[in-house]
Length: 115
Length: 114
Image 1 (cartoon, each protein chain N blue to C red):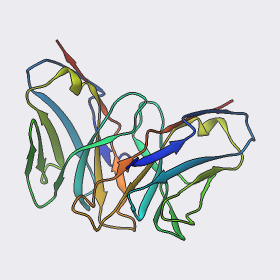
Image 2 (image 1 turned 180 degrees about the vertical axis):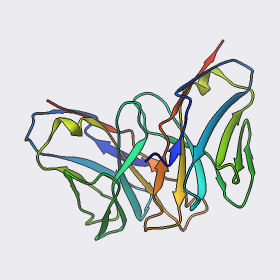
Image 3 (image 1 turned 30 degrees about the horizontal axis):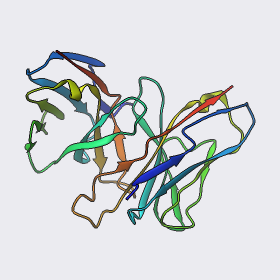
């Protein structure tokens, strides 16, 4: 299993540009999450999904959108990039039906710089 | 409003000694706690967890203690090894809301010196 994969690893955007951060998992996890981590801060939840077709806002959803058309993929969309969105973005997944169901498994992250 | 706090941004320990990382929380609705370890340029990896019905959980060199009355948990690493040098995040799960969302602390950078 590849686990949770994220692309790209690093991206520079100009203010106002848009982009999609990709996240995929091959563990058949139905729950998926997007976090951002700013320097010296903890991870903040942006959006989450409890299954295909179901998404909900987290703590800091403004400026982002998500979709969940399949169990495997959970892309995060930035429509109008702003310098405040400069951060490291982590995707995570879990399956509450498993013995380790409370554990979220994280991808390696995408570092985004908005100039 | 920081519901999960890690007040020590950094900790330096000698190899072979005990490392103690602390975490405080304010929300009494948190019922499950996790510790994650993070190396530079990698995602967080799960280390150990504890349910609010327990006060201790042990896994090899790692032990987590929970004091519910004080709303405090700690991670003990014995003996500490250079490979333990990383950022450690405390996370808590709340009972309310969907998705079993986690609230993370700001992390403690542990450095284990030779």
